[in-house]
Image (cartoon, rainbow, N blue to C red; front, top):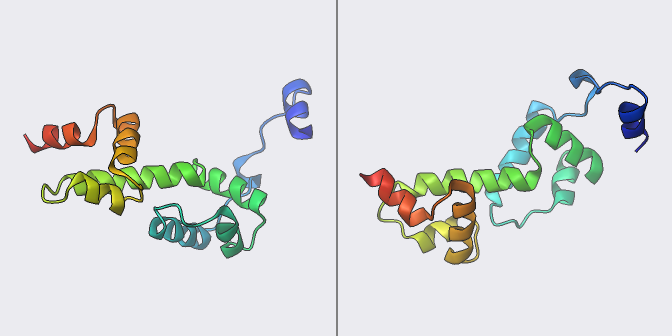
Length: 130
């Protein structure tokens, strides 16, 4: 709060990037591997923070400063990346893709995909098959 007040009302400037908390390349790789293996959301922020030997708050700040995203946003992006790759394989059903990408139901997957891409996964798949 104090930093916000100083920056907003006291003419303070943003903290230079070199002074912001970030994750080292090794910790970044470790966290991304943990998140990728748990696309279903089975991993907690506390587990990620512990793996990086950080408190929860420090970890969240460092992750966002390093990747530009929150862990949840990063997982959603990874799920969509995985889904797009699987949609290129016509033999894999939408229900299977939903499960592989960590969604509990095909409906949940379809809703998330529509939000991310503006159309349902079945339509997206058909457009790319032409």
